[in-house]
Length: 346
Image (tube, rainbow, N blue to C red; front, side, top):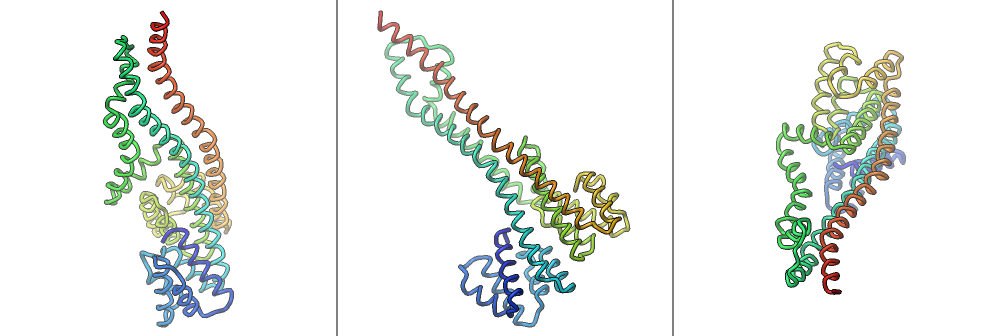
């Protein structure tokens, strides 16, 4: 399920729980009113399992692969402690914060990509329709063209090979590479590492994932999920397979009796300062709040880096794209044109 679908499902369960209504009847009624899709299928399946006598945590666990494991574990913790409404409300806040962070990252990357795409489209249009006209005029008058003009006019003679194909490779290539690599576990790990190498963008995505991981881990611990299992569940909820694999390693070390800071250290799952903060919180009996404070720090970093990306990258792309196009066409087209006008005036 997507974060939005999980938020919608959680809101429905929370509303029914607050109203004291039977979950099986309420979810069944809600499912009938939904459009066909994954959310409707999950809601209907939960209603059927509840009618069959399963508890809510059991019904959620039976939806493994469609409902995240951490969600079922948190609901179980809420039922066992008698704090289900509180847990559901906290889960709603968490899911919305994850969605908000993802939106911030997407918006920060969207505008520069659009500007770059428009620049490439403009260049392709000029190369395919405008440049050939100038090429014909210059040839008719027998002008001796400078090398830069000849180079630019080559784009007009071969716009498909020299403009459209490279542009397609630039934009479609990463998508194809992602699709191919995601077919295997090793490829998914390789793709996740490659994303982090992209300047500015990689650090933003990494910070957003750390925010989600530390916040979810804090929630799981706060509501009584054993720490080793909580680390695995929080890592498994990440879209980074490397983080999920490292979380399983940390889980094994914690299960062996290794201290929290030592279990985290050297694994690359979280920075050392987070490991130290978590260990200090654990010693003082406040591990959950300490982790959620780390998540708040990361969310502020995401906001700040996204703001920089939105304010710096778009103007940079505009200046580079527009400046390059302007320089090319002014030097390559206007110089011979001025020479032609000078010759005609004589």
